[in-house]
Image (cartoon, rainbow, N blue to C red; front, side, top):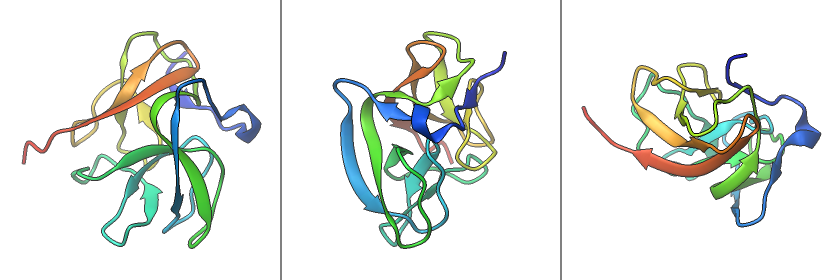
Length: 128
């Protein structure tokens, strides 16, 4: 089974030790999506086809443009399916979705602790 974002909203939850912050969405965001802060200060689904240089987090709820949503910015969050424990989790070339291989631009959002848990610890490196 390949890594994927858990698409069942009630399964997306922070675990003990997670650091949560509240931000405004700049686009439609689904629960469990990897999101990046844009230059306007709003969070949009992150995509590796562009250089990711800003704050990354995992959305805990769905939200639309202008809605306020909680994001796990660091620490454990249940949001994955099929992950390989201990593997790095990257921002993929599909907006908001995780991958165990680097996308066009190499950005690690964290590491999987289990098949379902991501430890958010972004490593943003600009190689351009």
